[in-house]
Image (cartoon, rainbow, N blue to C red; front, side):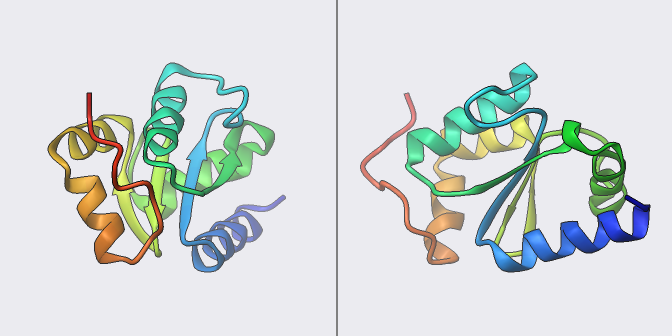
Length: 116
């Protein structure tokens, strides 16, 4: 896959899904600790999301970094907006800010789940 078609796929995934997590591995079998933590956070909130395994296609792995101008993975997008990686997700979750973004963007999640 060329980089241009990888960028097209990234744009399509972000445009067609409310919540997208570009990660290493899959939600069932994450291939790095940061991707695992990101999946856990979304799972604790009960958020439905599309995952994209960047290890399955090296051009997507590089292109998502170029697309976001962000060097690390995973990367979370909510309604087309780049939110950040694992550390940012964790900090936002603990502060209640991730939940606020989900509410603001009308994304269904389990509001009763609070940070531990």
